Image (cartoon, rainbow, N blue to C red; front, top):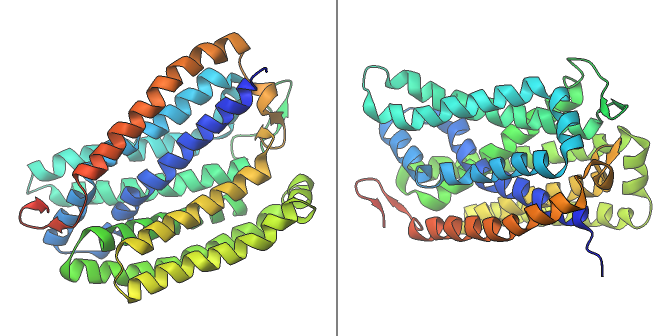
Length: 334
């Protein structure tokens, strides 16, 4: 039986991107919420809550981007020129945010600067990721196997909307992470932000979900014709269940449940994007098979992925296990 290597690699890269979104999403969310917690003590605890894991979370971004270049070079060469501006802004924001993790602890006089670098870097990175996603969903014009659009095609009302939607969603992940990891007044304030961002996230998901099918005829057919229509009926019920889980978890102080349910909302949204895209990797111009590298390359790289992906999963899981539980503001985790 011949393996469908492009499909297998599409699944691997899709998994890497999802892992990045759900893992790095909450620590970006902590940065987004940073300005709303003015006390230095609270900010110290917030940064400590993600300090052991934030850089490992970004491994998945490297894997997704590097995998796209190696495995789907046509898609990489098409998507990047279309999204240079938001992607460069995202990378610069992530750099400033990463530097802030190190420098904030080493200065008193300029601490305010690194506070804003952490908050601003997190906010810009989240927003530009959403803008890039929106631009990809609305379609990238391709002619003769190359990007044929203009410099500003990525900037549309829809992409701005998806930027704000992801910003709110990451804030939800950050708030529920703080509820799960912290105690005292900080956790209570995070609980309130979790309520607000939960309803904001679901509202944003509703707007984007209603808008997306009307961007392209293919999306409309995918969502309103059988069998896609079945998922169209099920999704609102699952989103409602996720929102209910967040709200009841916050009310009854089941501190882990809101975070897990927030992750569930992201997984649902991601599945929805996958349903809209498939079989395209550049909607609706280039399919997975059109963009794939030769089978010999895919086989060679698959051997490396068979080692690398489990290794990343193991050390990521171990890091979260070691740093599990609530944070003691004076001593660290306990």
